[in-house]
Length: 450
Image 1 (cartoon, one colour):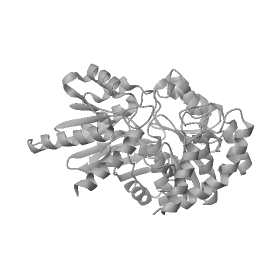
Image 2 (cartoon, helix red, strand yellow; image 1 turned 45 degrees about the horizontal axis):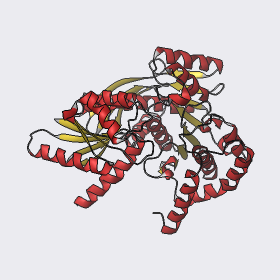
Image 3 (tube, one colour; image 1 turned 180 degrees about the horizontal axis):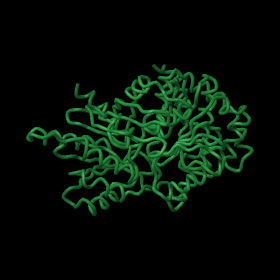
Image 4 (cartoon, helix red, strand yellow; image 1 turned 60 degrees about the vertical axis):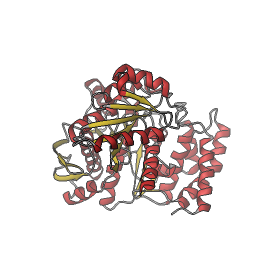
């Protein structure tokens, strides 16, 4: 429990970090993060690392890798982004957000050096670069046995790419952040392949042929060792189970059966096979099957097809691009038996908004459009116009804020459930920001109803 005094300090730290360049403003370079790491004594080199890049599935795969390592007895540090509700989530030690005193101490370790590097560089250190440096220090001070780092954007010039990873992981690649990463999926793949280190192990999720060609070329260029989904490892079997799924996986070094994963969606089974391959590559041997079963049984992934409420059923998912929306839609259609679905959509304006709406249309019966608190959020009126073009005017409603939209959808869903033999549900999606705010809103609604 964070004390009021520590919370005040944390608020001050977060405010100071937010005054820096936002993580959505990028000046592609490793100069600033390299400079801050140099003056800090290169803490990111004091422990072995696993580095994860890709378009979708990075955070969940990171959490799975973390759980596997912890079940094997490793002390872990996990760095992911963005956060759902508190920036402490980004820096996790042994599976839990860094405690307040750890965050405060780590920030104090780097604060003066941030100002020093700012004075020496043409561009200031960004929010993301500062938090990345903070994570490097926190993991060195803890200390951890292994660091697990999710790239923020891209790979080649991402601030996390000053690690010397023993294992690099590339999850499925799609079109996103095109203003920085490239106009084609091949250009994006080339940027993300920049995390591959010479003579390292590289775990590759299945990719479109053109992307696989780009990644394979980088693997060969770096004399790395590749483990490819569908070749060196694969998902052998997947069965839907209560609260999740039961998996069998052909790993890099052996077969694993009867793995219960308490997450929904075929895409999560792929993430599981990739995570297992990554830890096998790191260890160099087959893992104990019971250890693997325990690790996956303990995995959670907040904000990813997460059931927040039961009467009515409320599900939140952080899908923010067409690839993620497609995975959400596929899972709703194949793993749930809802009579109807009320959707709530709040999305950022710099995303492929139309693509997301089109992917959701087949599984959403009525859609409530709204906006989250981000200054990048697309306006309700513009989103309403775009949604009508896909859903038709009779299926789309609008509310000016997320809380009102969620409350409205839950009330309408409850009324339908009262007069129907089937079960209807509310699904809220569009952004990590939306997912984080939704979790807090639904908690407060649940608390008020008790």
